[in-house]
Amino acid sequence: MIAFQHLTYSYPGESPGQAAAPVLQDLSLQIEEGAFVLVIGPSGAGKSTLLRCINGLVPHFYGGTIEGQVRVAGRDPVALAPRGMSETVGFVFQDPEAQAVVDVVEDELAFAMENLGIAAETMRVRVEETLDQLHIAPLRRRALSSLSGGERQRVAIASVLTLQPQVLVLDEPTSQLDPQAAEEVLDALVKLNQDLGLTIVLSEHRLERVVQYADQAIYMPGPGETPLSGPPRQVLAQVPLVPPVVELGKRLGWSPLPLTIKEARRHVRALQRSPAAGCTEPSDRDAPDPLKDQEPNVEDADPLHEETVPAIEIDDLRFSYNGHAVLHGIDLRVDRGEFVAVMGRNGAGKTTLLKQCMGLLKPNGGHVRVLGHDTTQTQVETLAQQVGYVPQNPNALLFADSVAEELAFTRRAQGMPAGDDAALLRTVGLEEMRDRYPRDLSVGERQRVALAAVLVSDPALILLDEPTRGLDYEQKAALATFLQEQKRRNKTVVMVTHDVELVAQCAERVILLGDGEIAVDGPARAVMTGSQVFASQVSKLFRDPRYLTVDDVMEGR
Image (cartoon, rainbow, N blue to C red; front, side, top):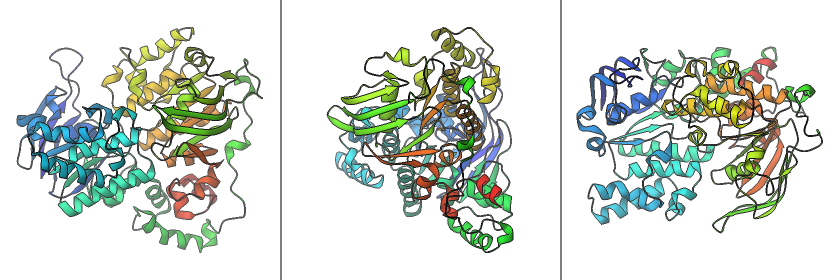
């Protein structure tokens, strides 16, 4: 179905007529018809570039230089361009906002078919089928601008499925979805693959969600390097970026290497039967959280506020969008120095709650106080001097000509002296990109630029909305280490996320939102162990509050 033969591609260089170093170099590989292919690798390794070659976005939209050959269903994407490939290849971008054309869900699904002159009766049937396949029928008359990030992602997938392509290409399709919504989308993709023989090529960082569905994995090690292709079990055994269950299997020498919870259970039963090997039956109390035992660094505390003043205090918060109630009756207190994860289904009100804490939205009822400030009486600019907010879409914060200038702008805006930000850029893995134009970077890299631009002001309260979108396992580990260090410095972190593995690593408290209300609020270990949906892979595997992460297991042996 898809063949790359000696393909070399470089994006345009900084000077006219000049090409950058090759992202893909002498690439040759094949994808069979009806395959479910998972493309993996570190951020910036060329995964998105590989996908863009399949429908001609590379080189027609991005420019640059290309050599070699690409064939998809016998067609040449370089010669036909994306329009000529649209009925053969459906492409879902990493950023769903980038491909929306109209503002009503049902119209968005029909738009491409209208442009191709498909009969009205056929269009109606396809729209109905696609709405049902992706479980978005209740959204059909909603405006895209009113949808959550995860809902928009599912609409983006639906909009390309209506053309019934032979190949479906998806760039991180579950990056903004809660675990249950991600499972629904992936189940729909598996059904399309198995029932219709649709060839699916999917790039994803959260491998724990999708690896069990793939029959081929392609590992991209880095720009210009030779990829590794083969069965997922064989490929994951040779690469460093793997899901927690696979990592645990590698570290404990399990054979065959498990890819799923089901496959790993027999190894765990053998482990639990052997007291010498550790991981015995759970005790009556949860394992202590090491972060709870650390004393805050008083020297780093904000001198403008007493420690008794909560970081966030919310009383009976109510808020509606155009008459649609999103938050109702929220009561919440977050003390200084806490690390809180806010989780819940897409559309539960998580992002809205975070925007209330930043003062970007004002309550319809109730009160929100942040670091002692009433958000209805305090300008956002004033709150921003002590509160760092990284939104779900990093583009909202990026407008300077270089990564270094983004940080310098924050310093000037906050009245801070110029400084050397090399240490911060090194921490978030951007030291070598300090002179790059931020909007030319990948989504994961832009996410880190936005984070650095906010953290350069050393805020007392850090608000993060889906901070791991586009980040690989190594970058997530670095982010987790960095955020834990902020907590040790008595900074308060409130993180909205669907990434249960990050929550297991970092958070000491979890809040689950459901339909605009707080459904659960408690210690991370208790909440995650008691949940079937919002639980880490290790928690599902052991069903033991002592073990949320691979490190927990290794330390308990």
